[in-house]
Amino acid sequence: MTKDKADGKYDDLISKLKIDCKKCSGLCCVALYCTKTDGFPANKEAGTPCNHLDSDFCCKIHSRLADKNYKGCLAYDCFGAGQRTTQLYLPNGTWKANSEQKDKLFQIFMIVYQLHQMLWYLAEAFTLTSDELLKSTIDLLISESEQMVQQPMDHIAMLDLSEYRLNVNNVLKQISTDISSNETSNQFHGLNYLGKNFKEANLDRQNFSMSLMIAANLSGCSLWKTNFLGADFRDANIKNADLRNSIFLTQMQINSAIGNSNTKIPINLTRPATWEK
Image (cartoon, rainbow, N blue to C red):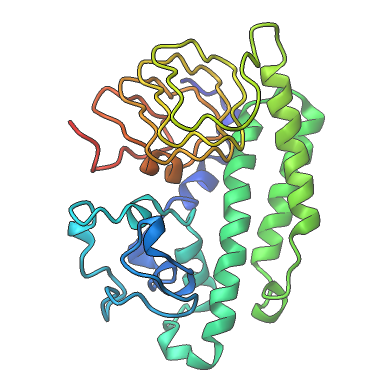
């Protein structure tokens, strides 16, 4: 996939939305509510550290997550919210060293996570439209998000993102409609494709946003500009599939799916080490 200069405007932003655990303080392993049924080591309340979180905020069993089938841990991605929260609000310490503010820090982490997820979609949306008015709207939304993240702790902890999220969703919906609005699109209707066999089908420009695609078979499919915004990809078979030009995919979706060495993914995503060769 090639990009022109304008399309690459937010390349630096995309790089900041990629997870970097070495610059974090294990926030996801503490702040999140986790359950064994979702593929985590144990049921865990939000604000409680995982039993496998080491004193250096690394996972004690990271190299064995696949062997233990901890799919929740393997799939999770914070869109860089962990290191961003640590850098902005814990520049000289950790949540352990700020025990009186740790609950507020965990709350901020979850807000930054939501903002970063929307930034990820907005940065891609910018490359998918030639509408200058829509591009200007995306610019403003990205700028607004950055302003929110830079606020003092007390302010960001109290943020209500409902209006901002609605504005982002309106942009994503408009772009999704523009891409899938032709006579060959939308052959499939509904949101439930649990275990559906699409093997080697032409799914170009299909809109599967917010769809349940758990264990769906997408092996060998043509997926040019296929929209997977918010789709549940857990155990979806994407072996031998070409997703390089699919849209609104996230690292978490790729991590949740089953691929192989022949699976082609977008250039801004990373191939999971657990995929078969």
